[in-house]
Image (tube, rainbow, N blue to C red; front, side, top):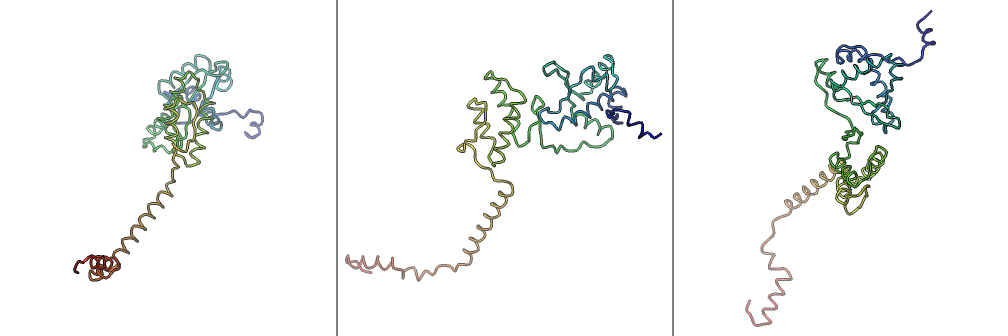
Length: 259
């Protein structure tokens, strides 16, 4: 019998334990298994942006997937928190425990373990104070100020509203509108939405358009200078032969003045 034959009798829920996770988890295999499990489900959760990378685990899930007892779970949680690898909170209707892997911390520790430099961040997203994933085209400082204003007005802020606000801002960005004046206008007026007021939002040219405009200006300026240099210097003798000078002389003669 082949191993492949045995696989037919198993549920496809095996999650491997990554080698790097064992030393990062104080060489505790159960903790490394828990982190590997969270890692796998976090990758699945990223396909659903509204989850913002959070996954929930019940005691039943941990018992079934990892054979973790309550004591083993509490030990794993303590090790992960001490190393800054995760965050957790209760959420949802039944207050299930949700987990979030601190990506930057995990990456830094893996690189330290391997003795290599941490690569520069190339993500298209940043995160607000609630770990909401936000496109980097949206200014994070103004986003936080806007949220503060909404909360100060007595309204609640949740992920559903954040998704709608982000979608709105990305639509404005797609129309090449500058988001800063739009967001500043909403903040200053205490609004709970964003409005693309053309008086306060100036279309922003793309980098390619800006470059083309600069190059066109340089070419026009060079052409004007070349044309000016190509012109011969004015002949002073012709100044007195123009019609304007003759009209002045005629006026002086009529009024009795000598030339």
